[in-house]
Structures are given as structure tokens and as C-alpha cells.
Length: 417
Image 1 (spheres, rainbow, N blue to C red):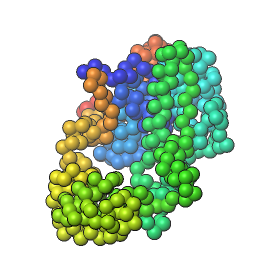
Image 2: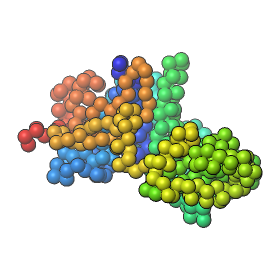
Image 3: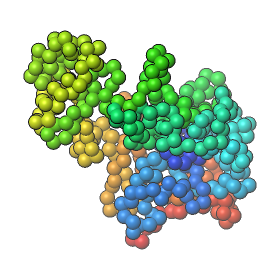
Image 4: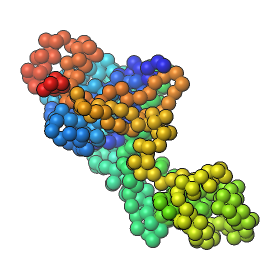
């Protein structure tokens, strides 16, 4: 297989936390040369675990940082110094993409804003991820307001429709308020690169976390517009379909869905009660919605006395939409996960006694490879290599930058250290 589809694309990555690093992680997995620029001392998320071995101290790379920054080149630059700014201005001549997720105004303060960088490199695609967007496109009432996953889940309304049927709301478990905006940022970058192929011009890509989460709540928005209703949490149920929820087996939980009458008839046959398929209480989608409580009683009575494997065999044997509710151990034991390379081996730190696993890349291609290639960098591990090999500085120039504390590096200790 050839290298990734983004081979030859060079990225300066100024991102932190989760949303921005997720976008650039996907780019690195797709073959781009991503240069992660950290402040002196390193990105603060390096302190987020878990760690394989606390005794390795700063040679250890925690799971959070390793997962999001695998396959990236690591360099430390003091962006607050004039020399650091000048170095970035020199580097930007030779890159395709800049990505950052500071609050509005920070890159302007550094003198590294889109207007400055695009004058140097008119083909530059400059992408930002902010809580509420950027003034350069449609504008925003909150240009400098920071946000994180929890806040954007709350303000976007997705928390308001997530929770128990008694009205208790919850955030969605993983950081979807960061990960989805990061994914959409990548979509925007790829679209801007395609536009550049046609026009020869770069442009600014504005990704708002709030906008992204509103688009993820699409059903809530059209439901309110069409009916005037204010949707609320329904547990695991669906407002229009039944059954569409979780049920207990004797040794675990599973979910089942009947989006139309055909799937309900399959369920009825699978549980040994085919007559329920034509029962007027359940024969249509509207009827099932009215009698969802009775359906729940029927399903629980059937499933709760059976092992989950037997439940799944019966349902899947009749082509029912059903799945077990898995935990992490189940995922690691699932051969499909390995077959699809969604668990990939990576070093937790240099010369580690064993590999660890991180989530693989969900994008697969027939002619190009897309997988993490190596662990995340140590603080400034690739500073010398990046500046000399990728950006043409001499060894003497790099040494001078190190002497002036404009850049710094940390190379792996030897295996015997």
C-alpha cells in the first residue's frame, strides 16, 4: 500500500486540549507531516494519565497525550519571544496548513494571526476551533469566551435531551463536544485544500464548537420547529420508534431497535411470539409508540431469564437490529476490533517494556495506508530534525536558537539509562 492520502501535506499544529489535537491527529494518521508546536516545558495535557510506569517520570507519555499526538513531530518554541515569532514566520512559508484552538485574539497577540501568515503564504489554509466561532466569517457575540466539552454540551442543548425519562439530564460520556468539532475541522481543512487546488488560494476555516453541537442535535431543532415541543430526555428510548432501547439479560444488557414494522415482526418471531407482529397494539409504528410500556414488559420478561449470548443469537438469527452493551474488556476481546485495526499498538515511552493500545483510525482506503505510525513525541524531541530537515535551518542556527532559549529539545534517554 502507498503512504497516507495526505502524504506531502505539511501542518503546523498549535492546538491544545482535545478538539484541535483530534483534528491534527486524524491528519497525521492520514499521512500528513504534522509538527506539534509546544511551549517551553511542554503541553500541559502531558500531565494527564494514565501512565504505564510512574518511575519513568518525564520519559513517560500519558495515555491522553499519546493517543491524541501519535505520529506527530514535536518541537518547542517560545511563541512569546520575538525570536519565536520570527521562527514561525520563517516556517510558515513552507507549510500547507496551520491549526490552532486558542481563544480569539491570542494568535493576534503573538503576531501570528491569519492575516499576517497569509501575507507570507497566500496558499495557506488556516483553521481554528473556537467555542463560538471567529469574527472572520459570520462573526460571533462571544469571540473570546473559552469553552470545553461540558460547557458546549450544555449550551447546545444536547445535555437537555440526554438522560433519564424522569427528566434528570447527563452529559454524553466521552468528549463528543470536542471530538465532533475536531472532526468537522478536518472536514473544513480538506475542503479548503480542495478549493486551493482549483483556485490557487488558501483561506480561513472557522470551526465553532457550538455550531457543531447544534448540527449534532438536528432532530431536536426540527422537532421544535415543526411541533413547538421542547424535547427532553427519554432515557434510551426514541421519540418515534419502539422498541428502541436497552433491556437486561441475565448476565448483561443489550439494545434492540425496530425503526419500522418489518423489524418489529422479526423481533416478535425471534422471541417466540410471532403473533405479536400482527397484534393491533404493536402492528404499526404509531401503535407501538402508544404501547411502548407493554412492549418493554414483554421484552424484559423474555430476555431477563436468558444469557446475553443466547439473547443475541436469537435476535441476530432473525436479522434483528440488536447489539450487546459492551465495556472496555469486551472491546479488547472482540476480534472485529482487531480485524478493523481499531486497537493499534504504540510505545508508551522510549524503550518501554511493552506496547500499549490506542484507538485506531476509523478511515480505511483501498490504495493508501491510514494508521498511527509511532508514539507521541517527548517534549521538543524532534526540534533539531524538524528545523534542519523540514525547514532548512543550519545546525548552527538551531544551536543559536537553543542558546537563546527560543527553542528547546529533549531527546530519549538511552535504553540502559
